[in-house]
Length: 288
Image (cartoon, rainbow, N blue to C red; front, side):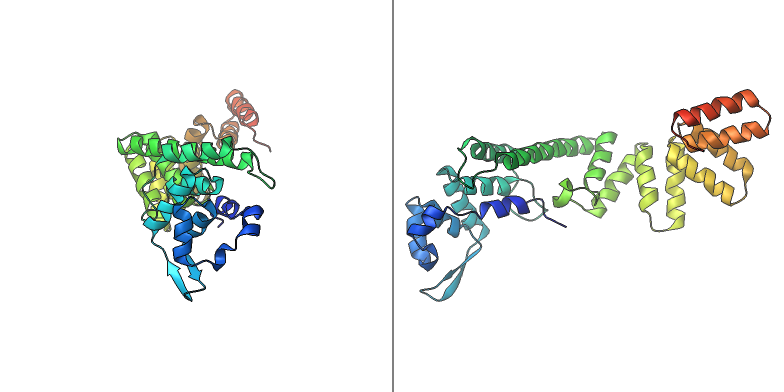
């Protein structure tokens, strides 16, 4: 799966041709790079913030610590280098647990905005891209607010946190924790969230678990769960129970259940009620 940060990282690799034309930085020793970096040479700083650098004169690979690299990134960002400002913003966005510095959304937004106000360069700074990253930052802000609300016991926030850990969205690539998703869904169900119960039913590996969660969702009035139980009863040739589930599902707004209920009423020769449910099914989008 493509990383959320890959476009920003690839963009940061753009090197000004004018700089490369005047100095071959890759021929410098680590000490020479440090001297230039300390003097404010942002191209030297760009190399100093990389995880490793092969010192050709010393014929050895120089490995740098995350703390050392972040220090150089901060220095380059403060000097106004747009690549290092973008890189610093990247470092300050939330990352997978246990990687990178503690997130600082306000600072990340500040550095992305600094990139935006700089003039466009030849081959330049794609403003739309950075605006997109600011939007991502705002989404992270909302997510952290939701997490605080969920931890305070708000049921809709719990369900939102579970959705943030779903594997299907692009935004949650720093999340995507199945155990956390199940934990938040279970907590939401305990608070009476029928949609969370439905999600657990669909994701449970065993038939018994699925049945348990479908019934919890049905108890909460979830139309899809009610319809699933109705079809299960039909397959088990339990027409009476199927009709009961279809009736509840139709009342909850399921168009297929409304159509089935109309059929039962028609068989009962309750024509007026049957016509009423046929109309409701059609209005909801059911097609015979």
